[in-house]
Length: 304
Image 1: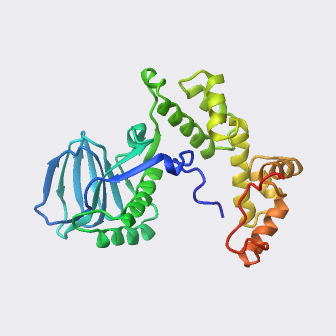
Image 2: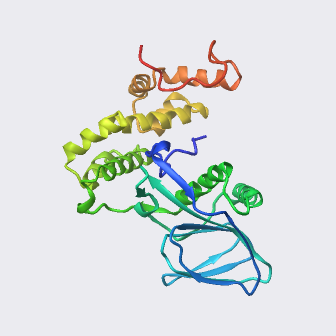
Image 3: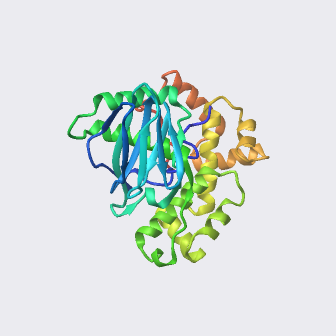
């Protein structure tokens, strides 16, 4: 089974670079048939429906909310909404900001669908209900921040259309360069089997190619080509851990030659594919190496 984090939109962005701020207490929606609203917010607003139906008009688009639906209203966007069911229209609405390096609005850097129907609603419904039931009435909590980040990432993963192009006037900003590198890393990580991905990413970056490649290596720790190779190996790790043979994992990771794949795997991960399979099997059975009983081995292994 493949790791569900593979291909994540935000996979190239380090956790410490993001700052989530819940700007007010959670709105625990409990709307009757007569409810309506016409407003805009100075910050972003994520709305998730738990029961009933709501209808919104947002910039000429009609959004119908039903259980499992989520809608992200960007800051300063006017919306008109009303209840559209006999039963109460319930859910959550959370106002927030999500900043990169404390200065860049990350949501503003992405093109996102206005609304989605959560694909994993059978699991997420329990999370949303817990978030709603435990929300303090006049404040926010540490737990809320973590749970909301999880819900927001789930939304972004489904709603993501693409990264917005940077204007020529902003490329001199060092924060914009960092964002461009993180976007490039995320795009490579999402499509490591595409032979042309590094060339495509490089062509799309609004920087001199040689300069961008140098900065990418400086900040990511790999050249773009080697980063792509490493992401292929991460894919192979998931396949091997899920029970694939070495030959099958090689083919699914873009390598026709299993012997060459094995050499590359050992170079990047520090252990042979077969050795990795065996180590994963022992770990599942609780047989950790001596001195590492408290957790799994961290890959890639340090070079001695």
